Image 1 (tube, one colour):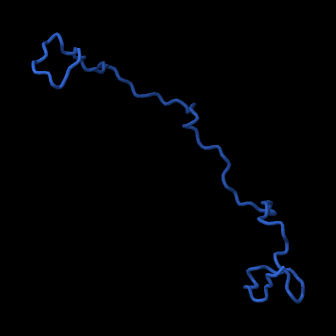
Image 2 (tube, one colour; image 1 turned 90 degrees about the vertical axis):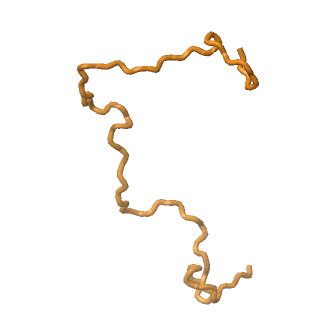
Image 3 (cartoon, helix red, strand yellow; image 1 turned 180 degrees about the vertical axis):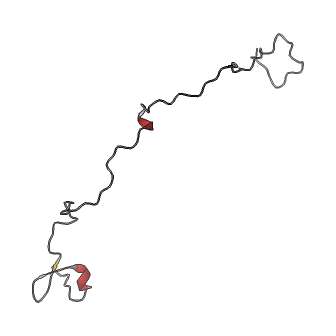
Length: 94
């Protein structure tokens, strides 16, 4: 039976939905504490990943650019970096 908001007469006891009794927890007289078991679940085990240790050795990461040298000195033709030159004698014409 659909209950409409415009219903003018009250519902009878047979038309109302049956109430469900609340769920109760069974009472236990002899409650024991939880036993301590070794952690078998992966989430409870300690972290076995390798710690970050300082690396000593040559840097084997890929360089940003393979072009070396970045610039040549205009007079001596030796390799020079962009940061040291500060744009003073840099010729951008190709």
